[in-house]
Length: 452
Image (cartoon, rainbow, N blue to C red; front, side, top):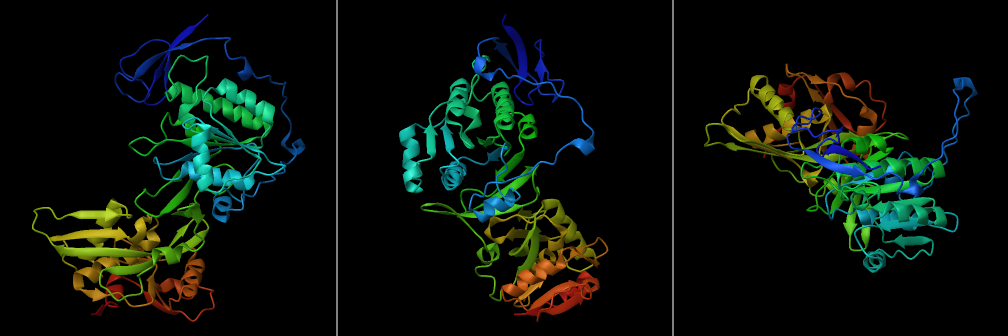
């Protein structure tokens, strides 16, 4: 007997009667009727064996043997390689390179011992071949399946027995026992939940490509991100040549790593030295710029902070940021006015991180503040110098972590001076020729700027 239920298209809340307002997310007129037909999707029937609780001392340790993709950036953000039986979700804007990346990864993983099945729900086999030719994907163990019916996909997976399955995209799949359209909340959720069970039962690694909404979130309910093992997001827009792949969730490794790729004519290429990418013209003496060292996951790289301060003709001056948190900028401006004695209340302030990368940690505070002060006073930031430090509300420069890794990266790129909190000078164990300039408060740091 068919069963009727109502699904909130905003949050995925399930109700067995229609409601005008969703009790979970509070949105009005968000429920959509759905008819569930039972007994029409036999390949999805799963058999479960009885399990009994065991003492933790009797449970065998899981031997986690990973597959290497031979792409260092991708292996690193996954925690060392692809884990068998894992479900990985990759999201990003249309055209940013999700299909390109996974097709290249699939080609590198495919071998006589590891067949790869690429399920294309948005393109025909001939259209997928066009991309494969451009990317030089020519492995005989890389298979293309243009299909959206989860029933047929399951049958082909059981027949082929691949170790890697790529679904492009999860929004195109549908189950026959649900009456809703492909891409709806219920279809996305149920298809993902089944694929998770299939991956664990057959020890198949499944990659899911997910479209994003206007707000930048994966299309569908948030429960989709809770089901999968790993969530990766392409962060940068299509306007930049490089792409940043950030780990949002990872059950088998760190969840703060990023991978940087460059979009070339023949596909995505990994960027092993991101500091050089973000510091192309940073060695010139110009006001309003400063070099900071930021940590993303386990890696350190340098970025250039650009600031422009100009007199405002508006009642409320502009505060515009790109790559820096707006609230953090407002806090730093207040400290510069109160403790640094800079008159910024009638100035427009624009702050940008060169290259489009985002900086999130407080260790970049000192560099941001010095870039603003440099533009306001029309004085240049010292050449071949980096700034490291967090700024407190009282104007004091506070210590930050992982200082040795930051200094090592800067020294490798030719920087010979470092402005940092006074308390960190004795703690650094890096033996380098770098000159350390310790500062205790923001006014001392501003005095280091020099006239052009």
